[in-house]
Image: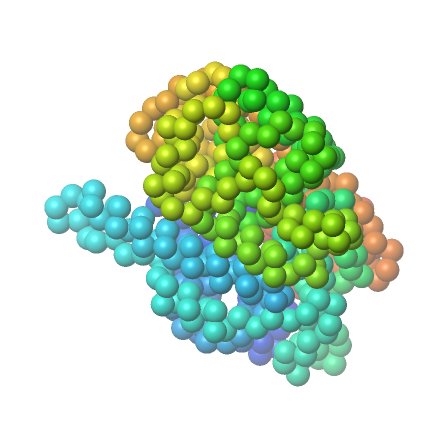
Length: 464
């Protein structure tokens, strides 16, 4: 068996891992690299394998850094199935459609600014490739083995990261023996709102595991409710605004769910709340279509609250003119807008109109990759660039990490310990993390493995 790490190796985006076993070539995830524009485009355009030679793609979940380059893969000749859970298939269709729109808009914007004689910029992919991906998506239920080839069966287990997310068990028949591989995808946390806890998985010969927060411990998620109460009461008293850059998938729905609880229990003053993201609105509809994957607390809530994603004072905004009007609206308000790392989308306009007022608050939630505007705001740099103009960062910056969807080191240790106590862990590879997290988690994981964990480099091939 050979494994080639084609992305998220020594970094946190572009998840993509190729497994070759016998004649089978299986790709785990196919995500977009995100970061500096020129570097990301080069990586996203050039695969480290031949897409047309793949036999299957297995998708762990629908975050763009895990699914976002599937249209390019299809455009380069991949014609086989893309296996995932049913909820992931529905969300991926929405996410990829939005990504294609962004690709086309970015290309049009860059072409307007190109110098005479410079070649035209083409979008990475278009809606045509996205439509083909949707035809190739194949939903598989949780917890059921699926024989996808005579030599390979797979099973999706609840990862607890976002709606539809899964860890993947793969069992290969190789030379008369079963070789067992486990891919965590992005593992979630225990006790998070909306989602079920991650399912424990038995040991394996090969483990490919994320490490985003491999050296960190998260505060409890309920701390976020206390923070929201504090920030909303302050905004109400100061007649100021709160801007929360939030990922359209997962984070926005968690925030709305908490705000619904706080509104129902009358713990917060009623100020206008706006979810300013057409994508968030579309994804929230998908959430409503999959109540079966919510946790027990939500199931109980649904008995008395028909829609936990709506409450008095909440407005979902889709039209651009409604979004622009918010920037001139007076009085207190809370605006939740994408993107979560402040790299694109409507949140840039809200930040531009808010960050120079010290009465306002920008609440940063979740991981912020290097070289992103979200990271610069989180680090409280005195000046930040938005749309080619420098702005003074005078607004209050709050870093709220209780809603991180990634497992922290204690969650990961709990998960690995179960594997070690069942059939053990042979060789482990750590991906999807920055250097400190990778190194920190490596020290934890070595206590549960037969071999020292490996931190692979992009493009490196390993025989196991």
